[in-house]
Length: 157
Image 1 (cartoon, rainbow, N blue to C red):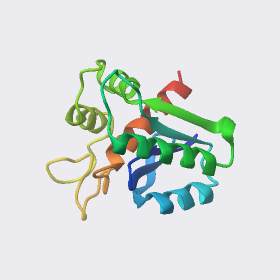
Image 2 (tube, one colour; image 1 turned 90 degrees about the horizontal axis):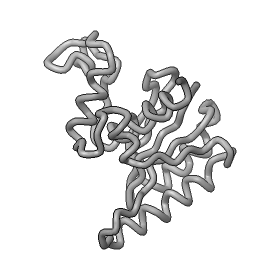
Image 3 (spheres, one colour; image 1 turned 180 degrees about the vertical axis):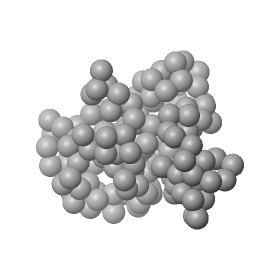
Image 4 (cartoon, helix red, strand yellow; image 1 turned 90 degrees about the vertical axis):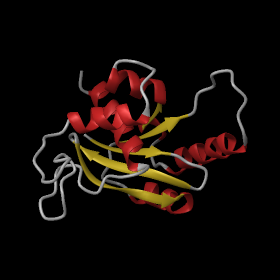
């Protein structure tokens, strides 16, 4: 199964195309470009987007702008029935077993779930000369990958 996963932001969003557990394309795009990417990614079976949840705290303009972009991304996808909204707490529970996990814990759990086949200090990422399976993954791609891995695990019990 191919999953297009998105970590939405106010102006830029991270994305990852996961094919049977392997990230085959990823990046960070301006949100308008992300909409174009969504429209042109016909090889994905479904789209997964990290969704914002309310925890009773006051939020600012950025949260509402991100919500608008989530809606625009959903509207851009060709099949409304092939969309999954994923909450951050579900990603934390799936990868780390607790909702108290931080970004560093999630990144480490992702690293631990891939083979250490590359070079360098983090062989799952590797080096240019000896890349690992996560070579090139950085910044907002990590949360997008976490969303994709979580959705894949739900799809393959």
